[in-house]
Image 1 (tube, rainbow, N blue to C red):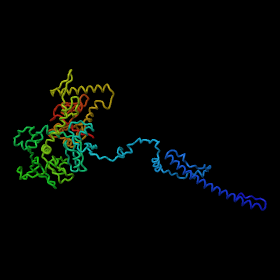
Image 2 (image 1 turned 180 degrees about the vertical axis):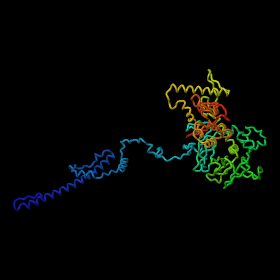
Image 3 (image 1 turned 60 degrees about the horizontal axis):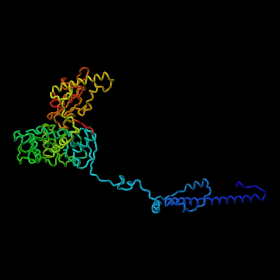
Image 4 (image 1 turned 120 degrees about the vertical axis):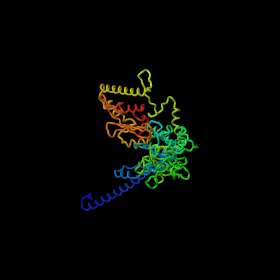
Length: 562
């Protein structure tokens, strides 16, 4: 009550009460004004909601807006109170009313993205479409894999053609898909006509497909006598070896004939590590063994396995795992068996030729004329090529000849001695040219003298520092045909190289030694009698000439990276 005034006696007390009433009356007016201000603020909020709804309805909300009295200037406290009120806009309800009350005079705005609103044409909203394609993963020798989406009717040949196209490989019709079972230690090459999806359905989860070359896939059509020794084919013994190679194949392919492969095989006893030597007979009806020596009488024959519902595999685990009597193991696996070793028929031959004969005869007797048709498909494709299209072939299928271009026209050098001297002369000319370039040009890390020692590493037939056992394994996996070869670094001499060559199903090794002449490093396979500037020249020469080798170099042992 700081407003109390001290006046004359009898008047000071009355002034105090009067001032107090004015203050209370002023506070009551302020409170009433505050309530009125709050009510007007709420009305303003509701008016704003109505305006928004009317604008959304027809855009003419101002003509129907309810009149509200103007607000008094608000204090900061009133502004705070006004802005703190929630403003609820019922958007869904307003949009529904706007759609219902839209006047006909206003044009509808077209939807610029109708495919996002219709589930049938939307890639996101449309239901999932079922596809007949299947996922197949194929692995290469280096451990890399490639995932393919293929239809259910795609054959092994078609998958190989697809991988050749995707990997930019040379298509020489020797590529194949390999069914690999690491747990069982088995693998086999799929036939070209087999359906990949169907084969995959019979494989276990740890099995996989490999992409690999197999030069021996149809080699028996070219050289049948090398695959079927006379002592193992029944009619050869009866005809005293007078049968021709063409008749030999016709007897296998003709379903009316009854060819028979016979000989001794080791059979692993079920549930034991011991093997028993039995005389076996392979016919169209199945594989039999004789219970009495070499007798063919029906009462002495017992069926070991049929051919229709089985496939023949090569055992890759080695002889120690199964205590095999030799290294030439193979087995017959029923198609329904996934990972049960008890159902496998483990067999072992005495040599590689016998094993190849049994396995090739199994394929011929099971598939017959279908194999011959698959063999003829690439041959017919080559003959149908136009003369203007350049067929993609591997070096092993090209007819390489030595040429002389010293005159106006080139000529083929038929004399092998002249061809060898021409190769030596060309090598000497190349070395002189490279030395002259070294003198005239600036030093470079890739000058020809150093290039000749590393250029071979870019070739498909060079496999670097691999062991002898690994080279054997690669040769065996790719067919063991005559002329299959690879080059590798020597393990005993760090400056030398080794040529690994297959001949008559036997693997041989030849050391390539470096020699120096006029300050230039040369390479020789025959103790310096024939020298080459680099390994590429050496390989090209022995592809044309056998020289000291048992056969020419025909098929490079290749490992592709997918």
